[in-house]
Image (cartoon, rainbow, N blue to C red; front, side, top):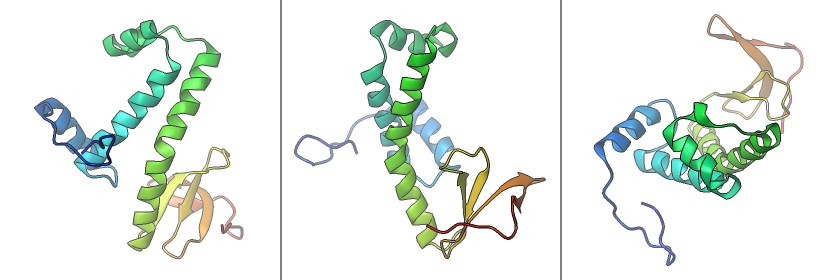
Length: 143
């Protein structure tokens, strides 16, 4: 449920289309249906803060209608990154606590994947034929 000002949740009616889209999305994430919808709301609220009204209207129609400058795209990307960071960190913590290996893009921006095993050991690498191959087998990093 989306929080009210008082911190209390409030039940809301959602379209079947939205609930079904969230249900499909959670199959690939570590979120509940409610968590997925709240995730989308956070992203939408973040984007609304940086886009012009006409860009929001164009985005509602179709993303191909957008004519954003490179600077505006960078601003939007940064806003989206901030919006999902909290959710991603919570999902990562839940997966690690469950003893699962987690894969994510390298936070340092190297363009490779980072594998985090259940013990917290971090190894950079890439996927080859759906198997993780360490970039440097002898080098991993811990945080």
